[in-house]
Image (cartoon, rainbow, N blue to C red; front, side, top):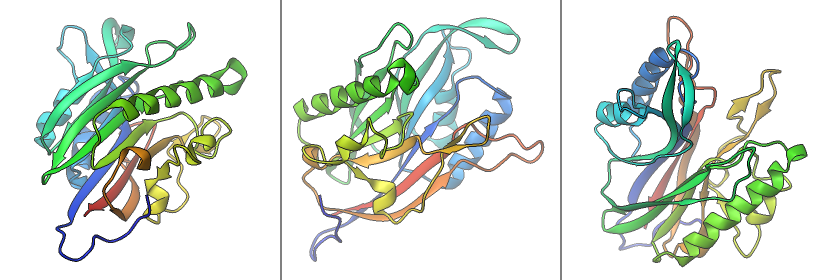
Length: 274
């Protein structure tokens, strides 16, 4: 898909998309959640793809629902990775899920299991069909394996990405198909770079919109990594799109006491659909 401006006589629709890993219940959860609410309100995004949305099994704590209420957005959650986690001094039965928040109508939502291993199981992909001014958008939200290359993580991430792309090709055609999430690898990595070439020829929307080099996660040693992405899937799209703007977001410390919303930063891209 070649980026271009909508042709004369068409009505362009702006679409602002954010992807963000919310870091489960780690760190100072209450302050982080407050920071998320404040900074997401300022973004005024149309669609937000979230990973690691924490929720207790009894429903008393739910990151996605708090954000949806704060932002006045619809939500669709794919519950994932249920286990006991340490939260506020206690072990609680909980989920680390995928969630899509949307100001646009969510026409359908489903999920699929991705290939996994004993060392890193329970990975899902989430598929939400959205309506944007009469145009259809398929938003795929994914969180790929965190395993290092030395433990087979690269091959597993490639297998997971191939599986969800194969599934997207079997779904009803949409005007635009976007793939968002935490891939735990850069798109120029050995395992993911083949997907930037035919037959998939994925497009990095952040780069297409003129975004500079970005780092979305820093290791404890301070190394910056580019793990979080918004991609266009041309083979599953048939509408012209223009990439208007790109930025990192959700990266400002809450004052005081310098608490960041997450250990990841968000990625934001604004599109024009023609």
